[in-house]
Length: 426
Figure 1: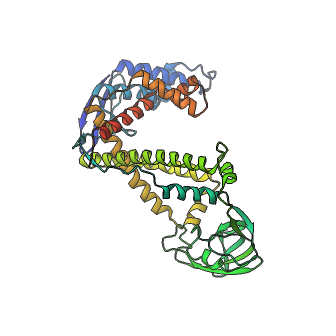
Figure 2: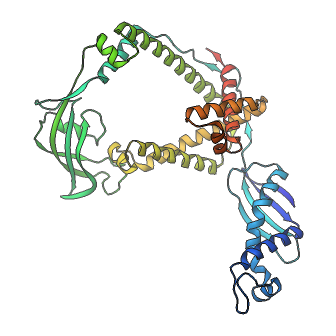
């Protein structure tokens, strides 16, 4: 087999592969053996048709597609290695020459990993982060923890912002019920802004046992086109009104918040230590974001659209999994938030483009600086993953395959560290 690579415009090129007729013959023989098992023409038992008779009846050309299916998984990876390219998407294969007793020639239009022209990525200036934790920060966090210990208790008075109402609701458009607009015994915190704008405010001042007509207008960009910009009515039945009862912040509450402490003073010290650690972590993240943002902005790279599409699809899958893990469907999410699927997809495509470019730049930096990953580092990472997912190391190794992804991830992380370590605090 021989291969030739011809660079074309952008990140595409033409890969021409010549397959020797000897290899073609072997593939045709293998294809015939598979096909013969399914044939039972008159006068022959199933799977016993001789090759010569097959050729007379069906023609050897009838085996060409099956032979190609056998050859391509072998010759395409070999051709890639031979010409030294790095494809980022499935090839668009075309037949150049395919005939009996001759070399076959096929071609493929291939999108390859783009070249990155690095700009400045060392000595980048970043802001010095404030990692000091004030007494006010600690008190604010303690108040937050205190509020989490609050209990919802029934109240007879009218609902106010911050209260939770348990409601049934049923939506009507032009007097007709619309799909997805009905729920029973739904707990809604007033002021949470989790429903359509204007819905929650109309329940303030209402009491348990009341029936309320709530009139709202869906946003113009609402994901359900039949409801976008439409004025609707929700018939709401209020079953309960609950308010938060916050306990006093003392030693007893401190023990309820954290069973490892005995006093409020101990909890205060522990909270301060955690906030200090959190601030330090956020400072590192901020430094990384600043340094990487500059390194990426300084680089020049033409990101293939197909790479952005692949990353976008991955983000969509992750989003769907996260939503389902919360017990919601994407339809309910869009309905409750008022966000449109189109707007979310646009945002994901933008995020995907940034992520792809960042990884390409970091990969180029790793190559430029000779950053490598050792076998020991890979083993340590596999062990860390095994501990995280409560699995044994051999099982994790089997799931990860050849560990290429682990190696690439570690190389990217080391490239990030290199950029940050070589930045300068302003």
